[in-house]
Every structure is written in C-alpha cells, then in structure tokens.
Image (cartoon, rainbow, N blue to C red):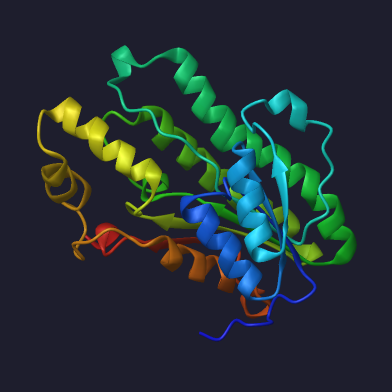
Amino acid sequence: MHTSGTLASRRALVTGGASGIGAACARALAAAGAHVTVCDIDEAAARALADEIGGDHWTVDLSDTAALEDVSLETDILVNNAGIQRISPIHEFDPADWRLINRLMVEAPFLLVRAALPGMYERGFGRIINISSIHGLRASAYKSAYVSAKHALEGFSKVTALEGAEHGVTSNCINPAYVRTPLVEKQIADQARIHDISPDEVVEKIMLTESAVKRLVEPQEVASLATWLASPDAGMVTGAAYTIDGGWTAS
C-alpha cells in the first residue's frame, strides 16, 4: 500500500505515542505526510520521537481527566491509543486501579474527541482512530477493568461515527490481538506469576490459544491500518471495528 504523501497538510495527534503501537502510528502517519504531535506522559521519549519524525510533543497525564475538560485540539486525525493494564481476579481488583483504567481508556478519549470535534466539523474533515483491542469484542479472565473499558470505547466510537457523519468525520476502532509491545511484555510476566507457568508457556497457552496465526501482532501492522483509516480513501469507513487478530474471532 503506497501511502507517501497521502496525508500531506494533515495534522495528527497520537496518545501514548512514544512507544509501542503509538510510536509505530506516529512514524507511519509522519511517513504519509502528516505533521504529528506525540502525546505521552514520558516527556523525554515523546520529545525524542517528535524530533525524529519532525513533529511536536505534548507531555500530559491523560488520567488527570479534570485537566482535559477545557482543552481545545486543532487536529485532523486523532489516534486514541494510550492505555495500561492491570490483571487481577474481580474480587481482588483494586478499585483505584479500576477507576484509573477507565479514566485513561474511556474518559480521556471522550474528552479528547470532544475537544477535537469542533475544529474537525468546521473544516469538514476528521479521522478518529481508537486503538481498541480484541478485548473490545471478547473477554478474558482477570482483565475486568480493561475488557470493560475497551467495550465502552467501542460503543463511544460508534456514537462518534453517527454524530460525525454529516461533518466529514469518521470514527473507527482497530482491534488487535496481542501486540509485541512493552505493555504485552509486562502482561506475559504477570500472567506467568498468576498461572505459575513460564513466560514462553504464557505466550503459547494463553495469549495465542485462540489465534489461528501463532505469533504476536507487530506494531507496524496496526500502524499500517491506522494510516489507511486516516486517508481520503477511507471516507466511507466509519463505525467499524477492524480486527487484526490472526483469526481469533473467526472461531
């Protein structure tokens, strides 16, 4: 897929943009011609990537949602990617962790979309790309907060699609299975501890058990789809959930 220059003159904002899927999206959008703002809590990493791709950086703790209520965003493409994971049985789940995950992964995307839509509506163009998860469509044990947040994001994305349609704004979710990122590497260690098995067994017996293709998703594969969704070619694609799951949901 040839994407060079397809996003020239467009502005993009990628949350959690300094590592993992976010960094891959930032690089891919920049390669397609967009001016990218790397949004991350890690200032040094965000600045380094912004310098690398000729963009800007925005250092912010998106879990501090009260501080986002008066934000105004001038961006054509918004990639809601920032996220964390906590793994615990429901009856042992720390309520503070539950609230943190839902603030960061549901409330923050709502506030950022809310801040970006007026400008998108005015310009008659907008692309909301929500990095959801296979867990926006399926559930796994011990991930009640994450699964709940991703399911909520799916619903919010569809509402955004319906409201934005007449203004040239699309909204879609990308639903990868396990992606080779620092977040997943930490999950492997956590799952190994909970299940008392080796990290290799976690990947084989837990993470890839439902996937027909027995490997992790690469960040660049997610970024490739995000770049297409941001392009003019995807103007009729909205309210959708795109799986990159190696066949997980086919069974």
